[in-house]
Image (cartoon, rainbow, N blue to C red; front, side, top):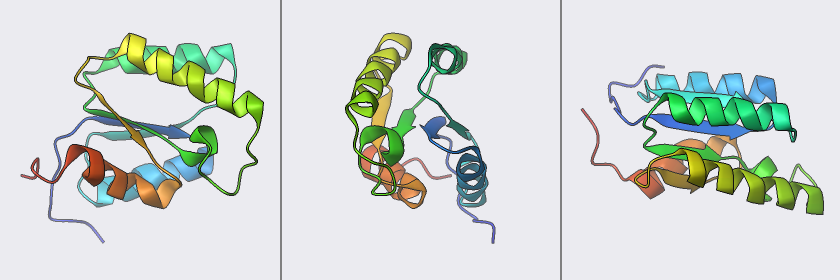
Length: 126
């Protein structure tokens, strides 16, 4: 079901799992988030460089970090390595985006859209 609302926000969301990312992006597009991009990341330098490239491609309104990385998805164990990865990614975002870019922490893919509304608000509808 396609939404009649349209959101102009430029959103980059990332988490773990390629299939989950693809489904989440399709879902956001169906809700009217036409400028949303959702990707899957792994904890390595190659993916850090991929993220840096994407962050520099657009003037993102929001960057959403999934629960599998930020520690709030119960399907992923809380590990010190993941905490360090999350910390590194926060700094990558900080160093490679505008000071106006909002960071949005979500617990799971279903929380992305509510997270966008929580942080960016509902005033950008067309």
